[in-house]
Image: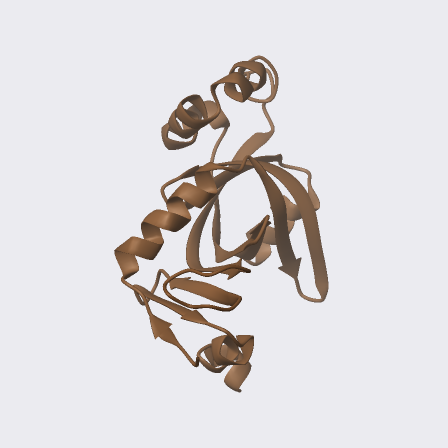
Length: 175
């Protein structure tokens, strides 16, 4: 098996469902030679991920310098571009996603992290460029473990067995 094309909307809908199952992951940020991966509470709205941090954190400063990030959740890796937004109460998409997808967590955090008294909390919005999911079981009529790739930028979806094919399609790795 080299590569199996999959309908983009089909895989996109699967990835949206998968993201909704999770409320915690690891955000990787970098600036020059400094790389950091930290655990983050998160919520999704479609393929968009939201999390929050404080103004004085290293990840906030690194995103300001380099918005390219990765977010790992269980068997998913999201490569994307982070945008630093305002206070949680000033980002209606974030609040809506939290209320709808994690109502109990929203209730707790609305009294603490999301309260107006927490003036230095900021929302991070991650727009995915590509999502990779490892599959250890059969899917898309593929009888072996494989990787599902959703390329949001190119609107392509495919499954591969060997990650060398993934890297071969990634310009940064071909140089």
